[in-house]
Image (cartoon, rainbow, N blue to C red; front, side, top):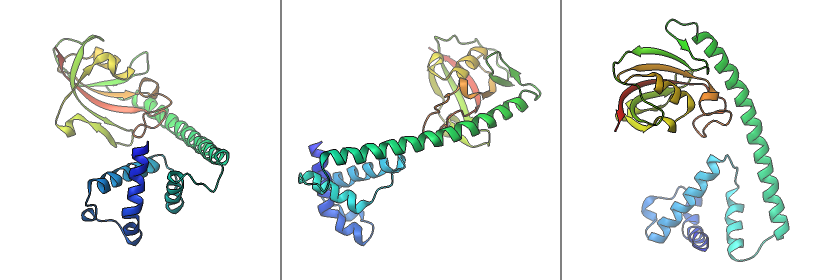
Length: 232
């Protein structure tokens, strides 16, 4: 912690004046200490952005200076109260946003699955998983304890791709029992050489919490999955 604070202090003293005039340039960071300081500061700023925290930089810099100097305009109790209150506010806002997304995604998913199950070739299993055979293979079927090699594309109902081994031009290998429930069920239905189109209800995917930052709460997921091999 002392190392981090010292590095932040260095970036305050060596590059803040440049940053106030405009964006700092790469060639202005000459020493290793300056570069490390910038990298740490950038990481902190990125975390603030990802957590959707609004920060006043002047006061933020002053707070770091005062903390290192063991000085403060607030008492320790007041500082604790300010941070706790802000954290509670952020938690409440995140929960409210999550609830709105969950309700929207649940409704959207239910409507899509209800329409999709009526399409030609779509099979709905007892769990609610929907699949359509796009290409039929003739190889063996994997067990839950097997590893498989697959090509796949994952996308949302609106068609947006969120993950694709095809785009990376590199198949993925993983244990069948190490993926989301919808995939586990589908893979054990498939033979090597099969290609399926999957529609996975959120309860068989990432559930009510989703997988931040890519998968929102209660999100129905679609996949094209090609089973290439049962890995040895």
